[in-house]
Image (cartoon, rainbow, N blue to C red; front, side):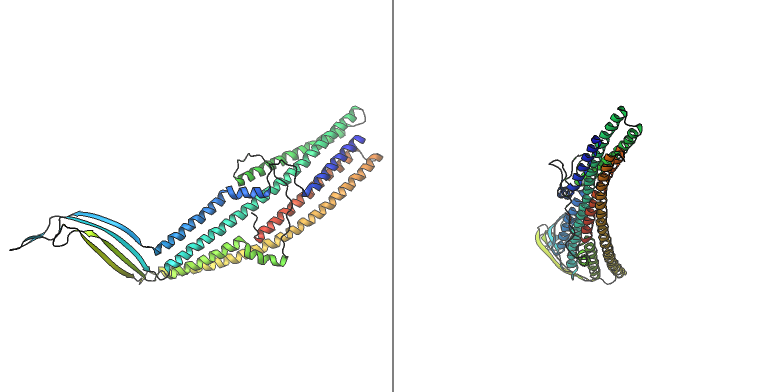
Length: 439
């Protein structure tokens, strides 16, 4: 009796120590990863982040391309032509003259410049800059979502590491109890029922342990994928459970979210782009004033047709669209509809954000209620175990009953830990809904 009592007491003290250590770092190796390190690796290595960043580089090139409309286009041309037959004119007393040379050479440098396009280039540059802003907002959104995904996986691993530790303690205690009841049977004071019952409990706990290890392996594989590491890379994570609620009143959260959520910024950015697109379409039928300069040398000038001479051409042209087959009309209608669509998207984003905030606040309240509930349950299970000890000493219950009471403590401690993990992840989800940076 004293042996089993000592074993159960040791087991309970171990579990209480695990629970008390909730706010402390778990006992992992010195090279275990923190949440900050994990998110940093994800930001550095994930292809979605690199792709979004490269889109910004492409947008910068797009801005430069739009600005090239202000610069002239310069090219050089050279040609040779052999003409025949060469026509000649004969004047009595003066001789015979060729009208053009048989070998014709021409080389020139040409410049083309748009002098004025009535604001079309300026609007195209503004549109290119808005495209860059859109890609920048997209990059922030990609980072935010990846940081949140990494956070969820991290806390799943924290929970599984703790659950496996408790599971191993359960297996250890049950195996020690099995040895105890086997010795009782050998001495003639035990029964086969106690052995079989203990073996069934061991089997159940071992099966749960297999599931926990499998789940941990899967979560580690997912986190390795996020960080750009080999899927089989083994590591531990440090337990960090110090997240705190946002430091702002509940009635200010919606306004804060409207000014910080990436989804709303993207929707507003698309509206700005749609409005710019409409302005560009309105400029399509504006006149265009162009200048062309060309200078070089060619032969064929009288009196010496074969002697190359310098020459130039300067011209200015005005292009005024008159009728484009109603293309401009329908393009403007399409652009105006796109503005309306983006306005609806912005309104939808606002409604979604408001709904997410309301749900997250309720989830946090529910998590706090669960923590209070399981804290009470933990206290009750500890009290039940103390009563079981007293009854066991009095001989009114069996060692199996006191083992069940000890097992209840382990289950309660795990439920309490899980509730606290849920509370932390709900806090991060609220921060995500508010638009607070998680990276």
